[in-house]
Length: 265
Image (cartoon, rainbow, N blue to C red; front, top):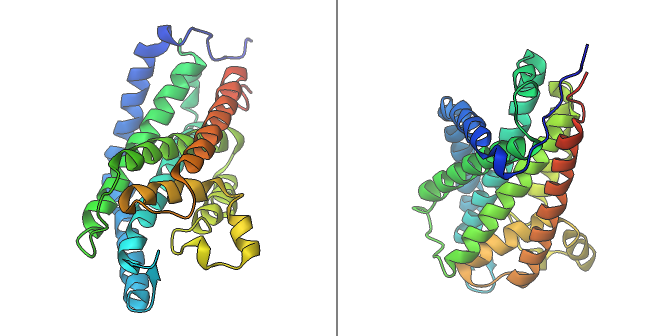
C-alpha cells in the first residue's frame, strides 16, 4: 500500500488550495474566539494590573517612560508570539491525534500550500490577539506610537517566525504532553526572559550578554522601539536578527514539510 505524501507543486500552482486551507485554519480558531482571543487578552490585562500597580511609582524606563506604558508593548508582543505559535502547533497535533490529517495528505496540496496556509492563519491569530491586547490595555497608560512601521514590521515577522516554529513543533510532537513540553520549556522561558517586563540594561553585564543571544529579545525590543522611538539596541540590528531567524526557521519548516517529516506512517 502506497504511503500518502505531500504532492510536489510550484508555489504559484498551490495558491488556490492554500487559500482554502487558510480559510479553514482561520475559521478553526475564530469559532472559539472566546478561548483563543478573549482568554489571552484577559491574561495580559491581569499582568498589566498586577505589575503596573506594584511598580508604576517605583520604576522609570529609559529615564522618562512610566513602567505601565513600557509594559504594554511587551505584553502585546508576548501575546502575539505565543498565540501565533499555539495556532499552528495545536492545529497540527490535533489533526494527528484525531486522524483527520490523512485528508490533507491525500489532497493535491504542495508543501508551499501547507506553509502559506498554516503560517498565514497563525499570523492572523497573532495580530488579532495582539491588537485586542493593545486596545484594552492602552486605556491604562497610552504608550504613544512614534514609528508605526517598526511596529508593523516586527509584528508580522514575529508572528511568521512563531507560526513556522509552531509547525515544526506540531510535526515533531506525537502527543499533547510533548507539545506542552516544547511550549513550557522553550517558548515560554524565551519569551518571559526577552525583556517583556524589564529593560535588559537594568541587568548585570553577564545577563545582558545572555539576553542578546535570545532572538525573542530582538522581536520585543524592536517592537517596543516603534512605540517610544528608543530601545535597548538599534532597531536595524533587531530587524536583521529577526529577519534572519525567520528565514532559517521558515526554510527548515518548508524542508520538513517537503520530506513529510513524521507525516508518513
